[in-house]
Image (cartoon, rainbow, N blue to C red; front, side, top):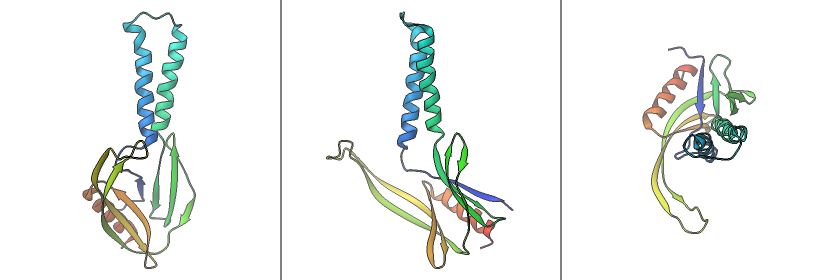
Length: 163
């Protein structure tokens, strides 16, 4: 399988705050837009459309924000990018000679402290890291929630770089 590039979208064990805000804005916008169909309101329809539609639009914009890494196997370059509206912005950098790819299991206890003082929720979390080794040190690490996804990424990167 000859892939031209590997694309990694950064993942978090839970939901990202920008994504959560985006989902909340979309839900609120839909409620605002649907409310006049079920209840009588004295507000102008244009205002309701602007407020509800604006919330939905901003919610979708927030959902489109993410970051990641692209590795181009042909040019042997990589780019750490920030994505907004599905445009990936970042600078291509020369990829050092990759000596190997490792899989690391990282388990930890995640704790949620919403008020900053007392933890309310905690869970044991395992992150599977696909780590690229260059010059004897860990160069890039990609976090995955599932071991199967990390192994697939290792194979894809290994095949693409000829390791």
